[in-house]
Image (spheres, rainbow, N blue to C red):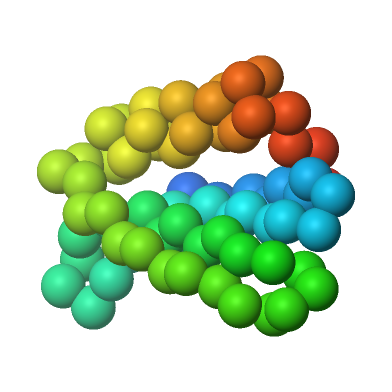
Amino acid sequence: MENNLVESWQYHSFVKNSRFYAINLEKDLFEDWVITLINGSIVTKMERIRYKKCDDYETALNEVKELIAYRVNKRRYTKIR
């Protein structure tokens, strides 16, 4: 079961000029699925971290897909990982 859990975790990162954006999908200590959003400046090294708790894996996965589509299509970020 642990192998399936590890395969369910996701990490995506994006860049645009001197900006970066990262999305992590993982379980927290309470076994809840959490999306971690990290964004900031490559130049100044300043960043902001936000967390979003999701009810289940499917909901979290759909949210991650929407966030990726928004960053790539609307904000014109380039996916690097």
